[in-house]
View 1 (cartoon, rainbow, N blue to C red):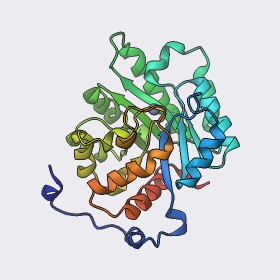
View 2: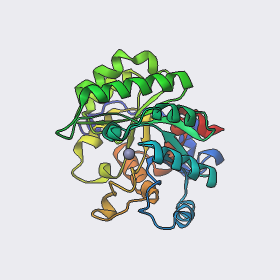
View 3: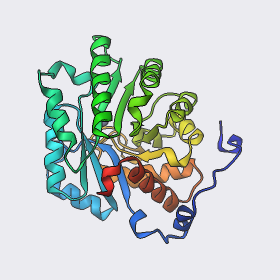
Length: 287
Ligand SMILES: [Zn+2]
């Protein structure tokens, strides 16, 4: 589907259309990275990186936990830097590291004022030794924990489209606080099915590649109000940094501009919309 086939253009709320001439409302002017990993040692001086993000207008970043150390380190960074928030959770490909009691540690992190979601959690069937029943068990348990904590979830979903859809559809009552499919990679048709369940969708560097027809099709099919920007740093650099490492949240302006182009929107409008969506989805960003 091309944009010209996308029959009806959405009518944006007034606060967003005001953003087009740069009269961005003060609290809607920032770029945001809703999913990155700042907890590794890839970046060198993390304080210098945080300063650079301020310079390019990335005002908030959410570093996603994928095991116990990354979730705890996320909390540490969030306490040190005002612009950093974090999520806590056990990623489906990291479950071999699981030790008795780890889910209790995740649970205790969820009550931190800057822990904005439970994640990243989900299903990943990419590797040959995938233990599907184990992944299902931990995904379900963490969805329940998020529901009890009143938090949204950040979901990782790879090579498992149909199972993922059925899994979350059967547990829709656990997703009342919101669910985000990060780095959305399934079809546009399926995106619309997830949308019916109230999902949000974030797109990163790979969506800026000329060849990434699938991500663009999904963005085009989805309403602006369901879209978010992420980098998944240090991975997945955008087109201008192709082949480099590490990627950083400083790539968010490029990703936002690319999303704006796909949606045929002014860049400031896209930026304001994503900022607004993020604060609607992650309630604790407003705290
Ligand atoms: Zn990630």
